[in-house]
Length: 236
Image 1 (cartoon, helix red, strand yellow):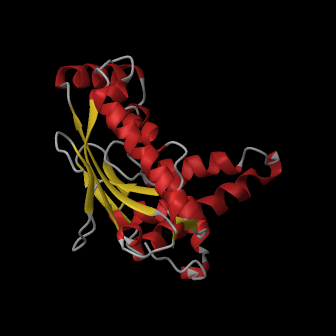
Image 2: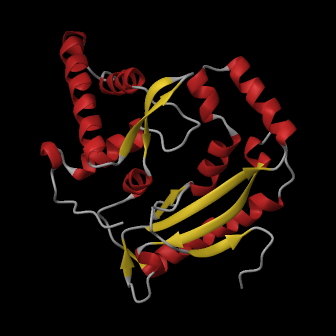
């Protein structure tokens, strides 16, 4: 994904926007990010080291900033609004937004990117060999496919900003999945329970520490890629 890091849409730096979308806006359906919850979390973060006399001013500034960030991200089509009959209106990253959230102005050598990609594929294969265990909810999922696309997939690139991947996960034990979800919703708040969904936990474990990889769940429209992993198929 090519990004002009020198741009300042609506006067906001691209790095500032990227950091906000990473913190504040979900990239999948298992974590709901409403406006009020985004503002609350950002205010709580900003107030950690504030004096009591600054609280009102900081709260007002953060609310204004959050609304501006969201408006700008909507214009850039990095996020979209979703209206759900159960959860109401909330924000979600688009495919481009998910790539943007993982992007970095830093360039990496192809060798460094390949090393992280190899480790990611190793983790995918390892997950697929594990026996489903409700004590380790991520094992309830399996990796169906991994597709690489974008600049890293192009021949001749010597350095990259990130490696664009499309990851497909599925549930391999429906009964265990439903049991885990019931338990999570019984003991946790809705937003926390959604974050504990096996798919979220699996993705978090698969991508941990792999900062060069940009992982989404859908290919952008009109974009093709190359399968690196396809369950039950030999791609060698």
